[in-house]
Length: 137
Length: 140
Image (cartoon, rainbow over all chains, first blue to last red; front, top):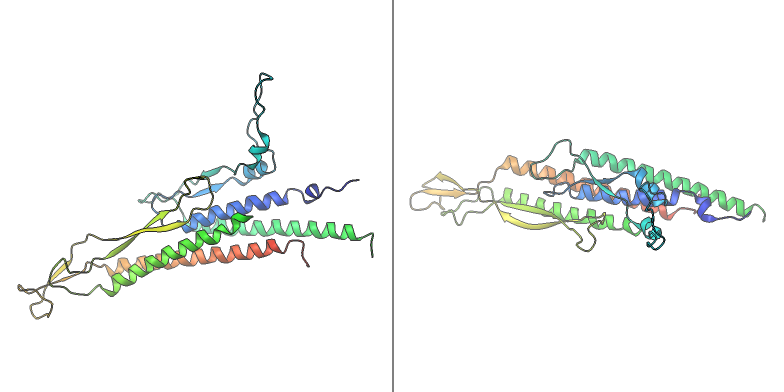
């Protein structure tokens, strides 16, 4: 039995990266809460995670001829998750669509989910450690 | 994870922008009752313009800091009062004072300080998350 560290950690590292990206987006929204014409953005976490894990839900390119160039799947995985625009509940006169309360809630939620991802990773690492050490001592 | 550090840049830029706004509010309130003999010499109420900093080379970047695009004079007409005994009155006895709306300025100030607090909170939370991330796999 071979041990692959990547597989052992599961999807948590990717989840952490997507969470970090989302934290950054929400921080930008809060920073621009009063900038005219700024449009609040967010990512769809499910889509972003499946994309980060290399299982994008977009339709794969189909080659109808052998001489067509194959799609560059390696590059597609590195693409940043699609950033969507929030639909404002109350449009502002200056074109800004940031709702500070909503962004605050989203930021807090995202921070908690980030911490739980970190916790998962921590447990997995300590599990691996004890597995590696069980033969020794 | 390098993008996590850019949050400090983004939120820090917001802190700077909000403190500039707080400064202009303080300036407007401080000069609200300064009289002058002509409309040209009257203090003009100031207003701050915010702008998003976009990276032209990479418009899909998640971090978009904010910057102060400029501080403009509000084109409000000064308030004219008839006070012939005022030392700053002109020949006809009129004194010109800036059209500063104190209620509006106070509301502006509260809004700026709330935004400031929100961004400080974002920075604090980010710092905690980063610390947690650095401790992955460490001693429990």
